[in-house]
Length: 232
Image 1 (cartoon, rainbow, N blue to C red):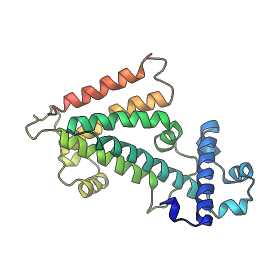
Image 2 (tube, one colour):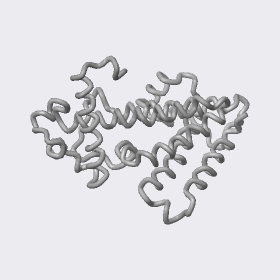
Image 3 (cartoon, helix red, strand yellow):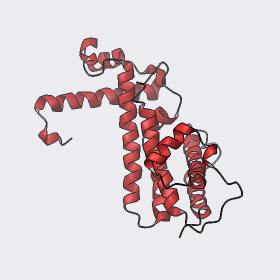
Image 4 (spheres, rainbow, N blue to C red):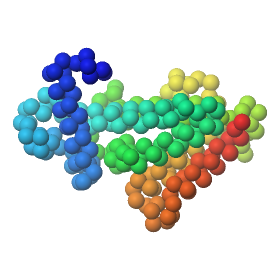
């Protein structure tokens, strides 16, 4: 929303909401996901518990808001990175590099979505923000892989069928990208696993003891994925 169109009261509420979410992420960074506490945030901000509950009635509401915000930020970064690329392979490379860059700049946000779940957190049944974020992010990768694979690409040794995927996942896939084939879906899943795996190792501090240049390892893996798709 354009800040210039907001009333003073609306701007103050937006600023307070931003401060609440920033402190929640800081709590998570210093003490783990279980440390997120509305009362703790209220004390740090000099607010009453009643006042902070007017922004987020429950901790679950706060965690859901955090996940929606973080998920949208990551998806926006990935989509923006692709905008400047002009070829399918270039878009896939840009997407892959943006994933790592965003994760390194927002480690707590990455851990919030892809790390251990927040203890006791239960999203609304009809509004799971983690699932919504994953759908937008992975849906974008599915389409990039589909565009990168030429129609003449030979089938892999391990061919896939729709029965290899859960029905609930297929329903979302066919709604978002109805022209995908089972092989493309499997390729995108394998590509995601390779990139996500390296980023996760780096964010959780496991890659630093194995490589002096994690960026080079990631870049080589990303290039190998692009080559394996026989793009352009």
